[in-house]
Image (cartoon, rainbow, N blue to C red; front, side):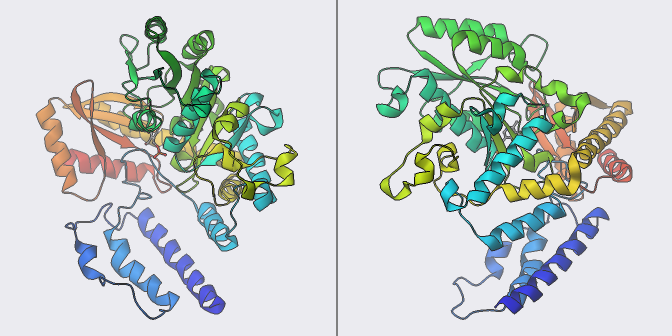
Length: 466
Ligand code: PLP
């Protein structure tokens, strides 16, 4: 079996390297021209009884599965926000899987836990987060989650625990209505997090007039009204880089309101937070010292493959107070010494893979300098594209920030026609959206293979569909 693995993993590396080279040449279409059910009908309905060689599995992957994939690493993949990766990330995933450890607590793999403490501290410092977000502070620290959505659920739990002085965990919050606040630009995962934690629909705070940012004054007024009505303001979620237009909420002003009101502030910086690696973009995090928790998806812009979200808090006692639980089978002298971190108490699931190796490899293989180059390159590519859009008659630039460009045609009908034509083209993928009541197209730049030539080619394709 292990000889079979050696040969097959060498072959997988070769196939992947060829695949990446083909993406760089923009050879395959970004998304397949398939009808639903194509793969369903080409696979057997029941699992094989007999063992099959690993080489056959690889062959079937490339013949049956890869042709049915959307190529998120393709330079003409401009949808959603990027989910990019890198050879270092892929290698780390292979090694992580091979070592197969489960790092739910320090005692179940001490090095997995300590590596995560070190790497999340490294990244906090590199992003310019205050010392209070580091494990080395003794009161805060980072933890790698699978997604920004999970990070929000964890942050809400910590916030509820703190604002209810532990009642949330002990007896639930019967007879009291806790509330979560965000703007209408917050990602849908904020609403989902609010629902799954029993808070129901979030309170939507209006925007500061003329902007797409949450209005801190309106927030303060709403919190006061809710308190006067006997409700419990619990958590505010601010966004650094909204999904629609990459708007940046003012964490500084929102943070001051949250401090005055004793409400937990979580900052969802899933996409744009990574930009803070570069001094010229560090403004995105202004005021972050007033936040209680902050999360970035390293899998969006730091070349760590999905999943890799890093959540930091300055108040680890509230987080572990909310989620900590120790049945007899998890008792361990190391935990009781309280000198160690048990990441099971920092997340919803009990078990967890060794999550830190991927970030450790990615950071070391690129260096912070290399990761800054990634961010700067993508911003340059987006700027080049935005300039092309801006110069073209019949196109309007709705927003351009960091790696995201949002544009439309003069009328909704013309924008929809463009969207329909792009959908049948398959050589580029953009995401349609509605911003301020108008149909728009989002183009987010983040593929490892984007070049000025690929940007110009993408733009010519879009123009050809008008
Ligand atoms: N927050 C923002 C601003 C996003 O843009 C997204 C997804 O693109 C998310 C959260 C959700 O991220 P995840 O898929 O990691 O839950």
